[in-house]
Length: 468
Ligand code: AMP
Image (cartoon, rainbow, N blue to C red; front, side, top):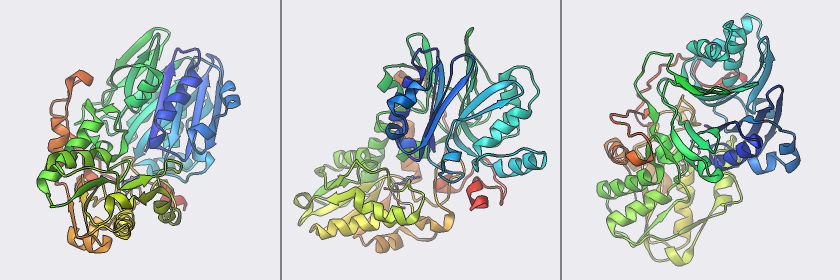
């Protein structure tokens, strides 16, 4: 997962990109970077850490130009060191080019091996750098054709923004796994992973970049084409369940509405007598509201989240993650004491968060604790850009809900069905917020194991596994 921003034609392109990245901070907290072009030369700043820390006023002043791309990183491939921060900017035979990537390439390791045998020297361990090397080898005279031809050999999930000296190019893979949207701020064009970035900079949302679409913006204006054979749409359903910000509209839908409806469906499918519904903040909040509305059971804040640490799961090391749960959440005794509590979260990955939370709620005096999850059991790893652990670490890959309930020590535990999830997502298509997407299809591989793009064992998503 990552967040990307592209800006064309704004006198303060770096500042606009910086603000856009701020809004997309939830999509990656390991590193942030901006590359600008003043029409002639590139300027770049990349740092490990949060957007607010990575760019001081001085750093932004080092980024002149009307064109800019930016990236917030959360590693699904490659370690979290600075050398893996994006955008990647290089000088090559045709000038300069930079790229920011959200997604994950399933054949990156294979491509990298071939490129290295042919003499490429890689600077990072990420899958995204493969794109730059392919681009450097392409011989076509114009950049958009070079990009298209480079991407022909790439499989997997990619939403990309490319920067050339005086052009911005946005590309979405033919299945459209990850979001990418086009907006407008007066005379400038903006690309971003989610509409919450447009809201912050007061840009107007225009439309999605469509799956398989290449959008070029330069001095002639905006043009677009679809160079690849049409593929079926496979937008990541987990963006709706967990990843995107609830105030965003992606995939023609309000993420908040989808989550609230996921909670309502969960209440329909798995009712239980209780005194209070509480969310695991923040990711479980809209679903818990939906559950409470549907069940008529009062909603309350039984857990308070500290907002001064990053998302705990996002820390790559398991030891830090364990520590993080206590850093992040604390129980409100006044809400929980003597109560039968329903706690709603969006997903269970390893089960460690739910276990700690249940213990915390019991320690605060709850009489009963019922866990409700607003998505189906996460049984399979994602190869398309969500950082999920290996299959054996996913508790639901080898344990039934009853066994998981015993592990997390709750009185009952239930997941939303796949059908319920798909109904909620389908019902939320809202034409007024973008193009309605009739017959939209989703990637739900993390819940079903139905992988839309095959991967070959040994070349699976992650170069991290090869490097570490
Ligand atoms: P776990 O303790 O491993 O079961 O983690 C479960 C928590 O992680 C839930 O509260 C989810 O909201 C959150 N979560 C699920 N998937 C991800 C992900 N890919 N990245 C970060 N957090 C996640």
